[in-house]
Image 1 (cartoon, rainbow, N blue to C red):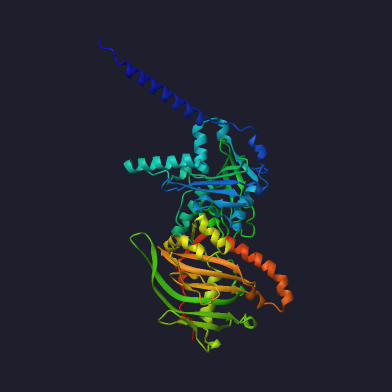
Image 2 (image 1 turned 90 degrees about the vertical axis):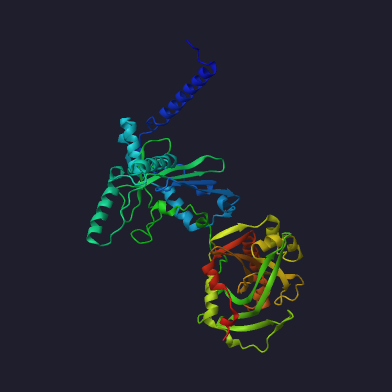
Length: 521
């Protein structure tokens, strides 16, 4: 009779121990948990009674699951100083106040309307799991696992996946809604594609600066009490099996019953740029006093040693247009100055200029496009380069950063004919640029750089322009009074712009790509 190898015995014992530990963890995880307080006592009260001060927010974690693929989607926001920022977007500020209001306001109120705890009271783990599925309050981790597991199984035997649950796993309200949709489809009137409610909950976690939990909520399907004017949903607090029906309508009364009404999960976006203020310049068309446009282009060639050189520089000209303040409602522009470049590269003013040669339609479209210019993505500048833009040191010190600038389609070329007092080469974009001055004394330079797929890189920077402010006031006394505040606002605007290369859509760029021949009669 042979003896078993001692090493095999040790291995067998270890495997048995691991299996026992896994079984214990699973048993503890799926044991029904009774709440610490009577759930029915929450009816009529706020569910999140400790969350009443939004200024406490220091970190936000959002997690969802794609109902078809089981892919987990995540977004995190963190507070730095006075701002919430987006780590997934190079720490860009999360300044979309409207999105924040529509998410946080309902959470602060969140009244409990009903409790679905019968299954929990029964102590039946299967009934509890079924309740969580019906209400869509499975945690994202559990739901993602079920979707992937059932998708894998369905690929083998053709059965329905968890991404397409049968009607038996829907809430009564969803089943009734789908049945009604089916009747509508038969009649051919206002028919919609029948969709089952998602299994996965939306996980919303909010923490304060000390790491204490302010909100930890699994947001599920719409409850039967929902209507066109009320967004009532099933929710669950992780670690508690009880399911609550709460009203997320919150601040949405003005939208209730309209096409603008958004259910709570639709207010959550996992696209970081949706949380940012996408208004690049933050100006109105009515603010623009002058437009200086550069109809020019060049390419950037990269040498074997890695250096980049601008080549094929072409310049159709520069023109300065002024909006007539006396006819602002009529939106009338005049040509104030025009410059051409000769074959030797020298710039000179074209004289005389015909003020009425400005094409109002083209200039108005450009001003409107500047006021609506939306950011679609950002790239962080190296800190040393960003510091130069923040301080307005755009002269010789930029030379150390020509490599980074060239990568995004920008280069320092000839002296700027619009600013002859500056001896340094001007920073230009390979696709031209626009320089605008506002009536409030701010000059904004917007340069267009390289195209990446369907996006165009922009460089934007601002500075105080005393002459622009002087043109909009009556005398020196008023100018002296307004100048300090105007300079401060210009500095704040520039600090916001300085740290980033901004990307806009190519379609927006085409509206701003200035062709001088189109702007002049």
